[in-house]
Length: 432
Image 1 (tube, rainbow, N blue to C red):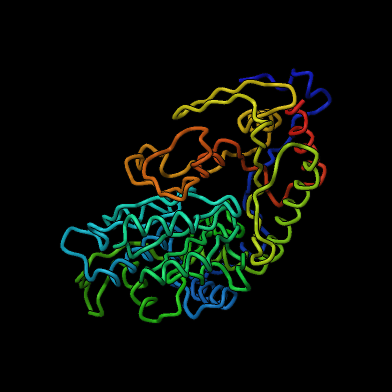
Image 2: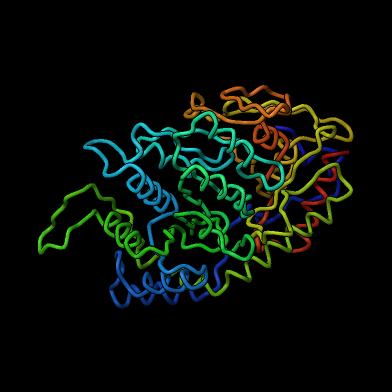
């Protein structure tokens, strides 16, 4: 590890006395009230007023008829994916998932929680490359994927770092091929696309209340729908598929996925502050953009004409001609400092040395060891699709290039102006 504290480029910068986090929970006090209320009334399991209120208030905020509280965003994704599979292909056969034998088109640059439910249901993920305008699923590559695999009927789309993807184009392509969309809005709660909240842009939507999200319950997630039938089915599946009998009667596989009333109490106390958190995150993004405009870098992009992100994480992309040497293995890396240039790992190591937390961009799914043999669809300059054809430095694989040149900056909404200024200064010095 490079000794940044004794590197002359960083003279005069002192280590933060308290860690600056990437994105930590921000509590306001009301969370404790509703948690205490759950304990006092002894409603601490998977039923209670807090759960009811979270489902009601979030459905109203987002604009859907039903929201089903679940233990985490991944549980919500699993229920959405399972439901889509059942709708498309019927009841699962014994010992098989609802997607058994079927391919699913999936966002490539995302957290693996977006993709794993496809495997849970015995489907095969086909990864669709990223576009550079919003860092989300590329509609051109998606269209090419349907040419290669015309029988696919399900698409899983994630909105990266709180920025909506090109949903009009993706929806048009899905409709043309009779495909359903599972919309992973885990990172984008409160973001809108053409005035519509993310989570409502597909056939099934989910959001997450994980500890680092825009508002949190420490855990928890929601399945979003306008269908009472779908909401009731997810409620049943998520409570071990218990039938309406006086005893425990089970006629299909179920899951222990319901949200607890304790977690719902934290979320209930967070909901009134969602818009405030979004405003704070936007301000952080804008300060980075202004403070770094003289460097050979850009911020994670969004289309101001159609969307309003929630700015969950502010990210940086280093220009190709300003990239210093850097290599990554499976779990380690090396970088070299060069005057006037830098690399994501140099910047991440630098800010870490001064007690601040950043993170690499999500490593694309087609580069992950567990999914490396799955098909990956990108678009060459001549418009032809390719599968499993990543060529480093070719300029073809957009997601891999963003992973190589990008990083997530400290985006905690409790970070002070002075603290952010110091981080901006550290980044400048990495390019000296």
